[in-house]
Every structure is written in C-alpha cells, then in structure tokens.
Length: 419
Ligand SMILES: Cc1cc2nc3c(=O)[nH]c(=O)nc-3n(C[C@H](O)[C@H](O)[C@H](O)COP(=O)(O)OP(=O)(O)OC[C@H]3O[C@@H](n4cnc5c(N)ncnc54)[C@H](O)[C@@H]3O)c2cc1C
Image 1 (tube, rainbow, N blue to C red):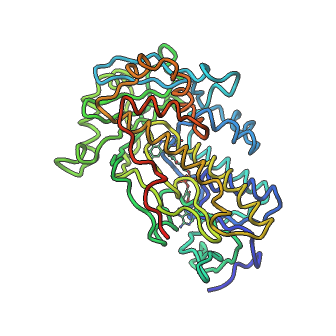
Image 2 (image 1 turned 45 degrees about the vertical axis):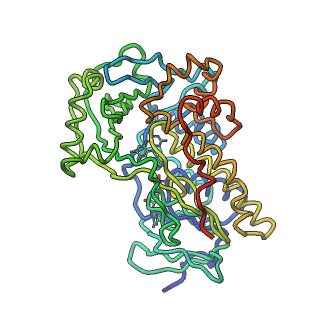
Image 3 (image 1 turned 90 degrees about the horizontal axis):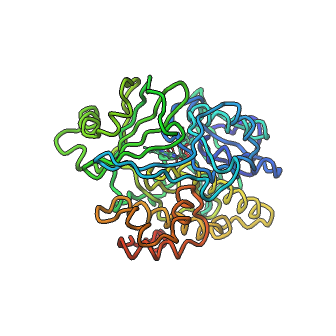
C-alpha cells in the first residue's frame, strides 16, 4: 500500500462524488478544510432521479450553482399531479400555493449534467477530486475512523489518513455494509423499473411543467418526468411480489404494467422507448447507525425510502449541508466523536419520518388525498410543503391529522440502533 502522493493528510475524505459528496466538500473547502473526494466512476455517468423539489433551491443558491443551472435550461417543474388508475387527474399541487418567485419552481434535470456541474463546482472550490478511484474500506483504529483505503485508476492500493470520513457512496452504502448496520426496510418493499421515451407529443394543459404520477390498478405507480429535447423519463414503482410473481423478467413486468396504464399510454402516444430498461428489486433501506467516532453518512448512503415524492436529491443536499456544519464545528473544537458529528441527526430523522408517514399514506389502499383534504382542508398548505420538500420543521399537526386516516408506521428513530 502506498500513501497518496499529493497531500500527506486531509481533514476530510469523502466517498462518492454524487450531489451529496460534491455539496458537502464544496461547503467544507470554502471554510478552509482540506478535502479529498473519491469517486469510483469517471463522470459523466447516468443516474436515476431526475426530478428536483423546490426546497433544493436554497441549497443550490448557497452552493453558488444557480447561474450554471439556469444556463443548462432544464425543463421547469411547477407542480405535481396524481392520476388515478381510471385516468382521473387531480388538480395539480402548485408549488406557487406556498412559495413565490423563482423559488416556486424547480427543475427536471438530466442527471449526468447536473452531477457533473456539482462535482466540477467542488473542484473549483478547492476540493481534490479523484475520479476512477474506488474506496475499498474505511480504516479504523481503536473504534475511530482514521482514513480510507482506496484503489487508484492504475490499480494501486492507497492509504489516506484523515480526521473525518464521510460516506456519500449512495446506494452502495460502503460503510453501512462494512460495519454491518445496513438493513432493508421491510415495511416499504418496492421495486423500480425505468427508461426513457423520445418524441413525446407537445404537452397539454401545462403538463410539460409537472411531474405526473400515474397510479396503477395493482397499487404501484409510474412517474412521467419531462426532460429536454422531447425526451420523457418514465419509471414504474411497485411491490416486487406483484411485479415478479411469474418471472424475473423486467421487460415483461414493465410492458405488462404499461399496457394496463391507460393514462400514461395516452400521454405517450407517438413516443417510442429508447435506451435500456434498468431496474432495482429493493428500494428502501436504512442504516441502524449513521454516525460514529470520526465518521458520518449522508444522502443515499444514510437511507433511502421511496422515490414517490422526489425527495432524494433534496435529502442528499440537506444532509450534506447539515453534516458540513457539524464537521466544521468538530474540526474546530477537535471533538470528532459520533455525537458531535451527528448533532443534526434528530432533526433530519424527524423530517425523514414525516416523508415516511406520507409514503405509507400513499400506498395505503384505504387512504385518499382528496378525502384527506376534504376532512382537513387546513392541512393543504402542509401537504404542499411536503411535496416542496420543506419537511425539516415541525409538521406535527399534519402528521396527527394523517394518523386519523391512516395508521402511522413505527418512527424511524425508534428502530433499534447499533451499539
Ligand atoms: C428509482 C429511483 C428514482 C428516483 N427518483 C428521484 C427523483 O425523481 N428525484 C430525486 O430527488 N431523487 C430521486 N431518486 C433518488 C436520488 O437519485 C438519490 O437520492 C441521489 O442520487 C442521492 O445522491 P447521493 O449523492 O447520496 O448518492 P449518488 O448520487 O448515488 O452518488 C454516490 C456516488 O458514489 C460513488 N461511489 C459508490 N461507491 C463508491 C466507492 N466505493 N468509492 C468511490 N465512489 C463510490 C458512485 O459512483 C456515485 O457517483 C430516485 C432513486 C431511485 C432508486
């Protein structure tokens, strides 16, 4: 094993150059911390998850990337609409109900460009980005993370010592798996299959500016997310038991559900599928421990629930900013203990819990959003806040109202945590 040739030591090593890792290192480097980021791939790379929520706006503004983002001219997203299995479309939930100006819209991004923008921005802010360099493991001494072992593009193993290690490795969950704290979430067992269509007809009734959720008769749903150049991202989320009851063939499963979804078929009249179908059998998981002495997890490396409310990138950016704050303070005071690094965890877990409650409500066949709003019209603003992604605040009135119509799952914070 050879040491990394450039710096002998860094303050922070980050595993993964997705939105979470790029945002966190940008913020820390700006505060003068020496950051090295290891990304196993060479960007640009394809990534699922193209629909932002408006709550990302403030993070992107603080990162300083809004001018570049505007220049990429991604389609704007103003609202979310739900379409029932029989084709009845809800009145769209407009973000402008709660927000004003440019903050009331967001973007449907092409991920390889969006992710490159954030990673290049990290570089421009002084982060040492090492692409094509996979981290093999986090190194521990006496229970404290002290660095990482990575493999260079030439296949050489390197040892890098740091004061703090951040796992931003996305669904790979490198550290969670290494420590044995990763666990699937059994109460949200969903699979996903996604692809793209080209040549979609011109949008009608403002539907070019929305994410449309087409519910399927079997309890699943399709997303319809407009992309640039008349391309549409389309994905199916449903129980793996239903999708793969007869065979593991994702092509057969996708085609069968697509054929059954009249609303989506109509919306895509004249469009043709291109590119491969991609799929994931199990979407939801968490880590029973998300911070410890010298280490912290952010973004998908921390937890992933469900794509229904397009909250993944927002949660990656939010956890990155919160962790950047706690890491800055830990480095300043010299206290890199788990409690110091994870000081933001209760607030983040509470926000995740709100989303999880709303995800459970969505999949509860006895629950209906129109009925909920008929019974609790005063909760409409809170519901739109959740669709905006504004969940890191007290929403107890909303969740109490929700509990009157759909049983709440056990809070995430009450799940057993690793020692
Ligand atoms: C089906 C589906 C649909 C989704 N739809 C949406 C959506 O519409 N909107 C939304 O906001 N979110 C969506 N998401 C979630 C969103 O894609 C993620 O939440 C987001 O990408 C998380 O960012 P991240 O930085 O935490 O992880 P990632 O973006 O996954 O980045 C992790 C990076 O780490 C790198 N890496 C992994 N292992 C290593 C290693 N050992 N060494 C070095 N590098 C490593 C990877 O190459 C990758 O670049 C969706 C997710 C799924 C599964």
